[in-house]
Image (cartoon, rainbow, N blue to C red):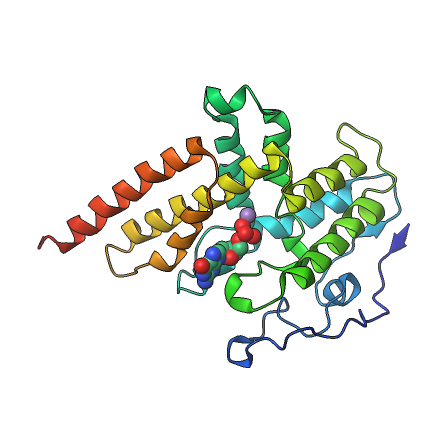
Length: 245
Ligand SMILES: Nc1nc2c(ncn2[C@H]2C[C@H](O)[C@@H](COP(=O)(O)O)O2)c(=O)[nH]1
Ligand SMILES: [Mn+2]
């Protein structure tokens, strides 16, 4: 049973120097990133090249404990985890309105929601503020999914196999199919739901309006309709904050 030892650096030079003002001690914003360098910085005993999926099960724990970075940056220190985000997304995919559900493989959409941010367990939750170029973010995440599917699950032969997991992740990343475009919409409305919920929780002390831009990126009429309802709710919420209690 091979236990992973980190040996090499990625060798990829940094394309655009990120804003040094926002570099912090988080592992995710480093100038040379590789699966090996990321693994060398965490305590793990992931066994590679075995037919047991247990190391992969342990790998998934990181998604349960890692907080979503976008909220943490706004001072929401005990916010949702990455897997919290994917859980609600998976439920939302199951509730696709009939006009959409009749055209989609919903089971694939639910799997895609649960897989799409899996690479963040090693790469971290990169936000638009980090200034990491999209190709670099995609490289890190694709290499992580290769590690998961080739090293941790390479010899596993079960229900959903490693190749299928890797293909579902790539389909979301490529965003060319109806299913992936629907799941991207769900990714955005899930973030907007959480935004309104944190604003409600903070009682008007925290304006998270900077996240509103994602609503303009939602493609399907059905998810747009959900979003309109949510933004109307938000309007009412902020009006209620303006009313002296
Ligand atoms: N500070 C900001 N963070 C943002 C914004 N839009 C998204 N985000 C965060 C939300 C997540 O933490 C992360 C990416 O989420 P994915 O689900 O796409 O992996 O980035 C924003 O406008 N500002
Ligand atoms: Mn996501």
